[in-house]
Image (cartoon, rainbow, N blue to C red; front, side, top):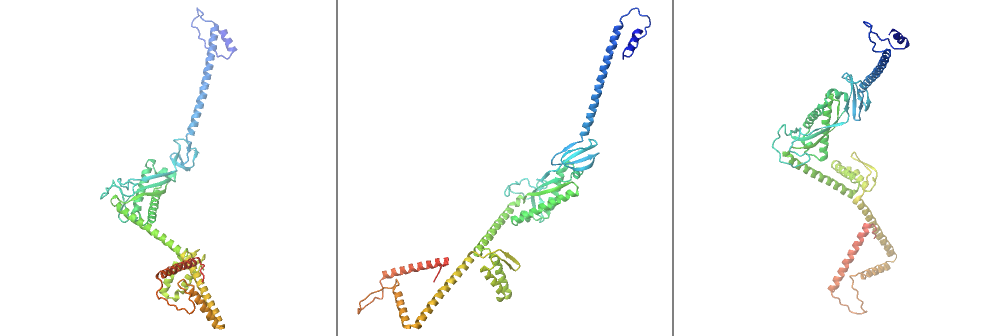
Length: 469
């Protein structure tokens, strides 16, 4: 046994196996030296396999731990989407706000966190707080008959400046402008109820400062729309003041009151008043349009300065008399004559530009000028004929008289009403005082027909501006 042991110790890397010292000499040898060597080799392979397995398990464990550390660190990263604003928090304290969309990193929880807040437009409606449930919001008038009173808590309303009641529904559009203030002062579950309460408070204050006639009563549609717009603007400003006073990090964008209604019991009377006002406004607008059209037809675009000049002339006449209004009257004549066409005219501090006389006034002026020219030419022609005849008379009076008499007789005989009889010399002529009735009627019809034709020809010539003597 010792020789074999010495051979093993010097021949290889195997450690020396402990050998039990026999208590007494063996009487029987069960195994030989080869079996013990085989057992030693087998134990060496098992130990090597166990060492390799432990080494692999160690590396796997190290990799797993490293992966867990990486995943833990990466758990602090978060992607901020479009329409969101990010806030970086560390140990519960905000360290950075206003993070823009994209991938952002922070220490993982529970050390740090990235919280996202929506930055898009939000809306809150106040539907039932100031509304009567029996009223259809889409129905302007009509509906079931109203009650004599409203029950608080069931039928909402607001009190106006003149102690009337009005129903309204409100809608607010807002946005989260400061994410850090919003995160510190608002719980997301209570956001809508808080904003709705602030809108109700501002609406009550705004309506309490406005009379009902400015909202749904008297006045034209334009002035009523302006009043409602002013109410919406002032109410939105009150809501924004509340946002800032509470440091909520919100910004009011738009506030609308739709619709505005009187209580059902008196709504029909309000609608009748509105209908009458709309009809009055329509008729007034039609009257103004008709006035403008008629004035344009009369004087064209110069009607405005002419009206101003006429009013100024009347005012001057009342204060200073006819002589004081001579200058204004000269200006009126100059406007009619077209001297101010395309020029600037100032009347009592009011400036008129780019006007031009036109319409029937211009046509009448042109016709008057043509008639004056025609009359002047006709008078001048008759005067020239008279002077020519006067000159002939002074040169030869007898011949001139014979010519004039001959011409007069020829003109008389050429008339349609003149009956001509030819008699031989020395004959006796007897005439009836009463002409033939049929012939007389025929002559009268011919004369009337001729007068009508001549008048029509004169009218056409006068209208066309070609009238001559």
